[in-house]
Image (cartoon, rainbow, N blue to C red; front, side):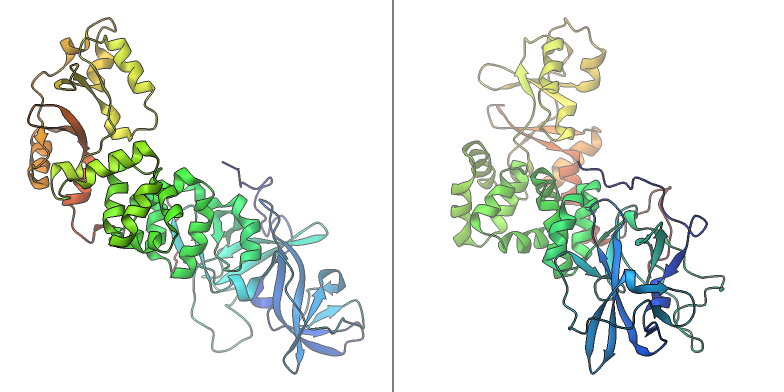
Length: 440
């Protein structure tokens, strides 16, 4: 993953000159002779990968609805109530945004960003600019909204006790909305630092435009994208997949767990299911077709078909090697090794801790539970949940009438089925070290 951490410590008022965007907007602009030209309507920054965005100029409204570009090198200073320029002339051509330029008022201020540190969407109520040597950069974000002052000039009272509390720009992922800057931001997407479940939560809270931006960043990491779709609310996943082509859907489903991919295909319109199935790689297609043959409320519909199974007479050392080689399996499915006979019949189950503690030269079947708790494909999921609770199981094998091993149900599978329908929409508890800024 590309690092997006700044090369230097975040700018602070103690280290150099800072300025709030709210105090700059609408400030009068005058030429070198003091003649009024208009007012600042926006500030322009250019994105620079993992560096702080550089302020390249301002947009000034000069009357008649016309906006013109004011280069930063034409600004004398920011002191006083009037922004004074070093020249008596400005290019009066109408301002047009260039490739990769971001307008801080139009694109960021008042818009939502991803608070990467706390994995939530927040709104930018003010921005901090910092003078770094000869240049100004965008350095901080204030996400705490305050009541407007009835008297006074722009923004909150800088001397108030509840004044701005800026956090480092690098703690956030901006959702700006226009493609030219999105292409420049994508390689440095901070959202990819988050866990798939956290990204899924963001998508479930996002607007449609925000969804598009977030998915655009995630799309560059196909494995992460598949993990995110596994975590999404079923209705949202169906809507987002349905907006893609058959080939694009198949590309995502080919990287998902087979049971999740089967659920996703089952939710597609009937006319799209077979074309998507036909585009899946053969091994994934076989697994998905197998799972689609079972009722979704039964053990067969819930089970995963990726698990560790080795011949019962294998020694413990080789069984542990089989776990090491199964790095693509769901972690919960790696907590058990299944001993099988030549016909795939389940002979026993050994927990990982048992294998680690056993003599490596021992035979697998000798350290197995040879009468493990197991269920059939038609077992109701609530009965599965009761069994796993009663016996404190992390996984439970699913077998056919002849005790052939067909699949494994993991504890997270059963939790997702038995939790209330609205569990994804409930606010998660914040971790102990989370930032507790007010994001109203």
